[in-house]
Image 1 (cartoon, rainbow, N blue to C red):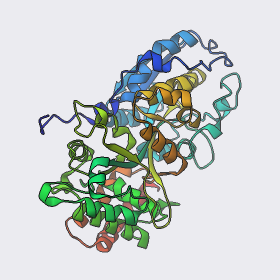
Image 2: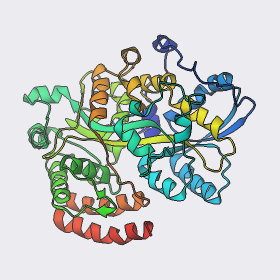
Image 3: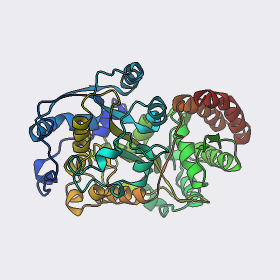
Image 4: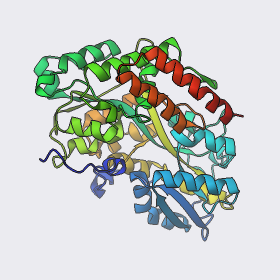
Length: 442
């Protein structure tokens, strides 16, 4: 295989094995019997989706929803950045052209709550004529509830798909050096350094080093020290724990990572791992499908999927996710809610999971043996997914200026990889970001 293959986009990667055979889905029984699905027949819904494998799955099976309900759906997928800009412009006007919107919780949650842009779905969830019995609050992973509910407990959307961060590891490289999979941060550092063999171009660890993209890596490590980057509206980015996490990041990225890592986003990390040159890679579980594809990967059959190791204070699977909600400006809220409920149903969630296109937030789907039988990824992948759900914690802060946060902290982290002092950089970045955060909440 040529070493300079064209890197697919993140979304193409996530699409992975998106062709799902009907046979793997055949064992599931539709759970749509209890709701009057035809109640809003004749309604037309406008649906605004993020261009992604999740959007693809919803569009692929849209006709099933239309047949089930008699509701006509006009759906459009837009690339993430444009979709976010369009959403803000239309939702600010109070008269959006769409009834349903697909949202990136880890970027948009606070912004949407502050704007009051999403309808409260709590009464719909409690209405047995609108909600099938298996859709209960207790069925959502904890992180899904944290994303979907505001501080008053109202549901502004339903949790749709989650991305847990975990460790991809090369079993062949580990076996050659007699190293066990690390279960703690200390073991992670020791393994990374033992597995690094610069003379042969082999590195023990890789993660994002590029400005902005690198912030979730450090924030993930910080969770292991028992801290989030922002707690109760207060920046925790210059605390002892934050600096320890930044120091750990510096050590991993300077002693065990490939040269030029400050220019690495997820694609460069994945490329190094695919070529068999990296022993461990920390990133989202949704990047798995290409690793098992012989056309793209030199490590097929050698990949281990590992739960995030335990930090000094906690074991946490860093968590990102998206949701689907009804706009406050919609004239068809109940019909739109039926669409959202269908989108996160067991049937649709199974399709999402089995194809590797995403991971549902619902425990009843990810823990169902029948669903797991149809998963095209290795069983170890499904196991780490289930284990991650039990220790999942939100990684990025729930604030409006998430992008600026990633930029400012990211510059500090890039400087740290370059040899700057972690404490100095984290304090400087915190001072720079504090007024931006204060203004956003004003």
